[in-house]
View: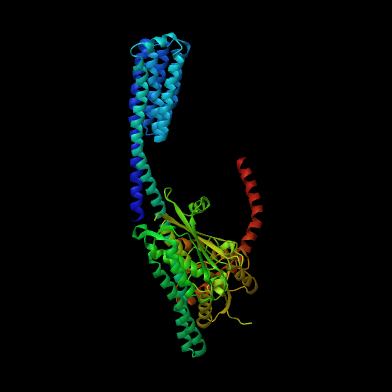
Amino acid sequence: MNIDTVQTRYKRVSEALQENKQKAALQALIPGLFVFTLVLIIAAKFTSPTAAMIESAAGGILIFFAGLFVFLKKTRIATLTVILFSYVIIGLFIFLTGITSGHINLLGLFMMNLLVLPVIVTGMLAGPGGIIISALLSGGGTMIIYYISGFTSAAQRALAAQHGPILIILPIAFQFILALILIAGSFGNDRLKQEALDWRVSYKREKELDQMREQFIASVNHELRNPIMAAQNYFILAKELGEHGDIVRQQKMLDRGAEVSQRLADIVESILSVRKLKSSAEDLDMIPVELKTFLEPIANVTELTDVNGKHPIKLAIPQDLAIMGDEQLLTEVFSNLLVNAVKYSPDGGEITVTGRLADSADLKRAKELVTLSPKEQYAVISVSDLGLGIPQDKISLIFEPFVRLDRDDQSKVKGSGLGLAIVKSHVQVMGGAIWVNSAGVNGLGSEFFVLLRKASL
Amino acid sequence: MSNKPKVLVIDDDTYIVEVVSTALSLLGDFEIYTAENGADGLEINENVHPDVIVIDVGMPYIDGYQVVRALRGDPQSAQTPIVMLSARTDARDKLIGLMSGADYYITKPVAAYKLVQAIQNAQKLSKKSREIQITMLSDSEAIENVVQIEPERAELAGKEDITDEH
């Protein structure tokens, strides 16, 4: 799947989520405002004119602003307006109807329905958990107000009357039913949210891969021009020297031409071998891979084909640790890392491969490099050696294509400068991250960390 | 000491240094100096005062642009023809190269014949431009004389103006 498709889908889901939020806000606002208006009408009819006036004014402002913000698609501000005003109005109500000072009446108890507003508001802001807490608080609040008002004679009369239980049950039931409706709605929203998050992760990851590919192509372009120019001109010069009869220098030019042509061939070979770089996560065959079983043969082959002396490879990997990966890419990644460890270690230097679950420090490090999926678990495989190590100023560069350390150009260690760039690309295509720690001190070596999604076997 | 024009070649790729310098001495009759990085290049420039400088762009530590700026900042090489020889083919890179003070921007790969021709042109042009400079220098001396006379004239003109007002 290309980056444009991912981007389009991410946009579509985000828009759906935004729409859904607005719908949810409207859905919650309508019953809330309905209850509120009802209470206002009754209040205007039965309580003191002052109380009715103040409550009407507050209610009017609330409806106006909440409506305005919903209209302007500022769901969050609309929600906050409702929260703020519902508490102000409930406060006013409790103060004005004198519920705590003994002047409670039937109407006052009916107005307990107002406590449904915080539930609605929580529904707009928070998930199912928040709604449950809010419903319980409102229910509890209703009971407490009943309890306080129970000491007054008017309230006692009201509660003792036939419709007493209805007065208690009605608001609490109303609060709980609304909570249930909101919870159902918010589950739907959560699904969309999760989907949007997934798409965002894939989008970001595709973008990172895209950047890496672009950078790679740019450096290939740059890297090919030098040897092409050298090869072309060694042959031109050989021809010219031949015409001058300078056979010795002609021979030298031809030798150099052959040498540089070989270098050119190596680079082209590497480029062809990394055509996998073009692949995106969708072209991979991601399966659960049991690490110990998978890495043992790779380690054995590395030991057997070791041309730089003897380097024992120790595997310290729990039996049941498995990761999600494409076997072909994983083979390239770990052979490359092991061959590098062998290349840069003194004869006899031990190489250790460990596997474990990623801890918070690993995840933190990986998140600086790539976008990780928050719902996945990750495992870390490390390859450490006791070799030359990597100078501090080069650590950030070694995964870039064609970056070789100065010492490599002078030493027997050969390479195209593409190995680690390929490894990084492979790891990232599989949704993982790679980094290295090294003190840059000969003998302390370096440790490469590969973080990949954990698989459950 | 030979009378051959001197060319300084700065490139971190040893193969490129070799082909460019061989081509220049074989096809172009130049005396060649080479450096594999910017710092060495600047030092050689100080010592030998080359007639033409050929420089790569992508080099470690100090890149070609920076070296060119440093060369231009030095009065000794401020007028030396500089040919940038680069694997970067973007128009943007070319512009940066020319803006940093290079006279020519040639992209790799380039055949020896063409490169030598370009360097010869650069060297000839520099000779011409130096001649022009010398003429301009003598001209500027004349201009300076004129300017020195000018204040007196201006004073006289001012007096005339005042008289006119009356």
